[in-house]
Amino acid sequence: MSPYQTFHPTGRPQDGTARLAALRGVMAKAGLAGFLVPRADAHQGEYVAARDARLAWLTGFSGSAGFAAVLADVAGVFVDGRYRVQVRAQLADGFTPVNWPETKLAGWLGKHLPTGGRVGFDPWLHTATEIETLREAGVDAVAVDNLVDLIWDDRPAPPAGAVSPYPNDLAGRTSQDKRTRIADILRRAGQTAAVLTLPDSICWLLNIRGSDIERIPVVQAFAVIHDDGCVDLADDPAKYAALDPDPAITLHRRDTFAALLGALAGPVRVDRATAPLAVSDILRGAGIEVAWDDDPCILPKATKTGAEIAATRAAHLRDGAAMCRFLHWLDGAT
Image (cartoon, rainbow, N blue to C red; front, side, top):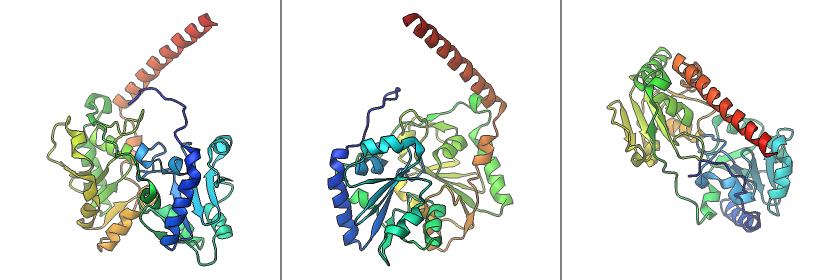
């Protein structure tokens, strides 16, 4: 994994036209008039692993934000003002840039969808808020298996970056302290557990850092924290080999996450704005009460400890010194 950022396009627009045709073929077989392809992964990340770069693979567009809506006769790629030039340069033939948020997805679908047309989406890649917005606007959005994955024959393997401990002296609190605090929040709210899907929340809670995404030290995992402070963590156990075992944290394979959810007792806290819709669908399918509430780690994570503030200041000093050295070098070189 390179420590340096490059700006080489990762998409292959020359392949996009054939991939678009293949996607429309599986859409037709599934009885769908459309399919949504977001940039985000199951963790709502702006930066994604190669395995989750579906938007770039399909369309050629490699920007860090955007989404596509593919219909039988039009395929819109929605981007904001940062990417208006880039998207026109990168898109494969057959895709049309759409200015977002000026053009809303629901309105665009209402204009282009045939009467009675259903739009498929992967429930692991969209939040409850996103899908509710579409359905409230009259869009017949249906959860299906990811159709892009069905045609992506050489899809990369899941990321398997090693996980490392984050020092307590930099965090200012131990993981046990944090888990005790979150458990208390759950008990006071009358909730038995909370589902965590944001990598930064999990890393903060467990005092760990990951290497699944280049230059972003997070781990891609799912977790459930219970009202007693114990945590079920769903990920590849091999990634955690360098960590000392903690009896309060149980590691499970990532593919067992749905079963973990189905075995919970409610009410279970789920963040409507960040968790995949699949989470609440699984819970409700198992007869488990869903308690819509914010990710319980977000506010405590934002409240910095003295150690975190000191570390931030020290990092800024180092960064400032590096910038001064660079400007001095640049001045001498020119």
